[in-house]
Amino acid sequence: MRYGFVIDQDRCIGCHACTVACKDEHKVPVGVFRTWVKYIEKGSFPDTSRHFGVMRCNHCEQAPCIEICPTSALFKRDNGIVDFDNSRCIGCKSCMQACPYDALYIDPATSTAAKCNFCAHRVEANLEPACVVVCPTQAIMTGDLDDPQSRVSRIVATGKVATRKAYKGTQPKLFYVGIEGDLLQPSMMRPEQHGSMWADYNPLDGRRPATGDGAGDAAPGSARIVYDVPHAAPWGAIPAAYLWTKSIAAGVLMVAALMFGMGRGAEDGMLLRVVSPILALFFLGITIVLLIADLKQPWRFYYLITKPNFRSWLVWGTYILMIYGALATAWLACGWFAGSVPSSLTTATAIFAIGSACYSAFLFAQAKARDLWQSPVFIWHLLVQALIGGAALLIIAGIVFSAGPATILATTRVLLGALTVGLAMILIELTLPAMSEDFRRAADLISRGELSFRFWVGVVLIGTIAPLILLGTTLRTGGAAPAASAAMLALVGLWTFENLWIEAGQAVPLS
Image (cartoon, rainbow, N blue to C red):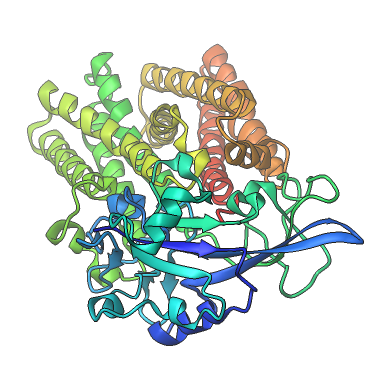
């Protein structure tokens, strides 16, 4: 048994009865929606037409929200309905990043995620969902897709139906009849610019139309969004901040292990044996605090351990960070009490430092809604960023704790190489042919859109080119001051890039 929806948009009159019935049935608060009706207009006056699209959860067969949810709060019933248990939700908002259909939201009343659950309580009582009951034109139909005699099964089997974003591989069980094709692809539409209270929508902040990202560059007469509901970006400054602190926490001991391998331990043992793990643990602690602070239910953070979903990389990341923290503590204990760190421990710590830096690539890959984050080279970005953060902090610490010039120069070379490789990777990725229209729009936001000034000035000029010049000066003259300045600027550039990456990835509308 697989319950599914068929929505006949040829019958839909855009009355919003389904939205009202859903809100009443589930006590959905003002400002958020489980189902909503989107309007677009096409053509030029006087030859114009208006089209409607009923938007909601697609109850996917391969639901990415279930895969990424770290506590199994999202689950699939035996009848195929994707349901939600808010008592397990920690409010991490990862499901919102995974859903390509904007179907999930944070309920302000419970501070947990929520979505259409097919009125599962009604289905269990052999009743139809509330939206089906109230639809005055019988545009919304439900039934068992596996039953060849059901109405929805016959329509799907014999009629011309369409689904939203089938290329995402989610196998949605919401089928449309007669829907205007542009409603299936947000990239084919542009917001109106006239300032109507119903049309003010910006994927960057959920309020006003965006410019410079392709949102307003559609040809005259193309599809225009004239009514939609806001979908604010789930993640903000905190996720960007913990990407930054995690890069530093992982990178410090990666670079310290590299320095040990280069024989620098004898000369600057205190820096590498004691100061480095203290810095790593400090920034790791900040990372964990930020991770918990970003949860809508922060007091449930331990559910990641007690109720884990091992398909989610949030869970694997938690375990990796815990092991890395334990190894860093062992490194500090050996360095402080024994005066040396075994090579086996430095190797193991370096491995988990790499894991701590890079696991986010797999987590972001599970956020299937965001095409920019699906980049296959993102894992290498994270590795290089960790080297940048770790080398920059070690340079500053080395100067503060009077490390030898050979160690400062060696760390300077690591930072110079990482900055060069990192800039090359970013520029190549932004200029290569885009893997999708959504990826292109997000990349254009960074390279030439609303975010371009912060990218070219903050990341490229201040965060990369200026540090490279200063590091070159250090290598020529051996001066510590240019190296310290370069390290601080590199950390600023890294911070700026993390914020841009999070912001641009969520800028392209999903519905």
